[in-house]
Length: 351
Image 1 (cartoon, helix red, strand yellow):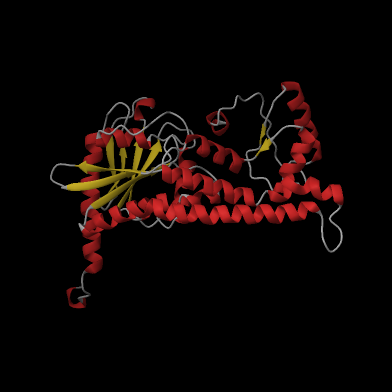
Image 2 (cartoon, rainbow, N blue to C red):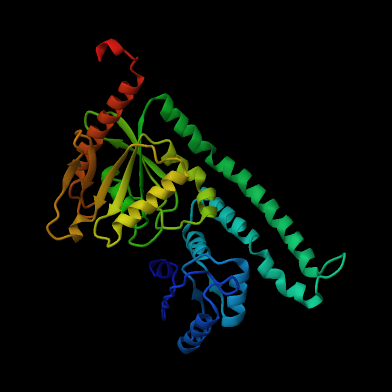
């Protein structure tokens, strides 16, 4: 529901379905589809949103039956990204994701032409011809976008290499969308990155210098928010942006501590981190929004080994930020110690 509202729609009615198997023709089955059609007519809804991914055939069949556009989860997220993105690199990434998704929907788009002339025989129908023409056009556009993306990220890659040469400790903020990542980023860097209480408020990676007394220069990056079942086309298109996460020395995994399903959101983020090969990077959980939980106070949580594993704070109320700095220092020291242990020569006589 939050995704639908974030896309600018007003929810008229919702329908929940429990089904063991997916209907290949309508996804939800003919009986439920008739109920949905009646509900749509009663509420005079202009769009139907399905909180799952549909095949091109299912999407087409539902649209014909309902008489209004049917949007699945992937398309909804793509629409939100397309409406929000502003930076050059982000615009390229979103269009690349949209074009890649569109390539798989051409059968649905031109199926009516095939029905008009049948598409039987050696030559085939006009629908088949149009599909091939569109596939070729979109494929060319995708290749052009990939080249543009390479050029757009070149500067950031150069900056990253410079940091690596100077051995600068880098931190990436990750987390479920709307967990407060950008608010935290602004609070600890005194920046003015766009932050709002809505899904996917941030779609570009922003990096700033972070100064913690006695630690020298650190670099911290704010990244795009994750979500359950993030479309693979978006993960692929935003891979260049997400590389800032892959190359970080430490991840600050921001969690909305007041959210009812925060544990599942943590797991959803971990799934994406694994997909972009960032799951092995040291992580510090940051439980944000403690001001929304009665009696919860800022604190650092430690493992039995003494390693800091979590910080509880409120970025909006600026509470616990000093503890976050302390935890970052301690975590950095712990990472360095682990690195030294791994690099140490094997000396069995000392055992």
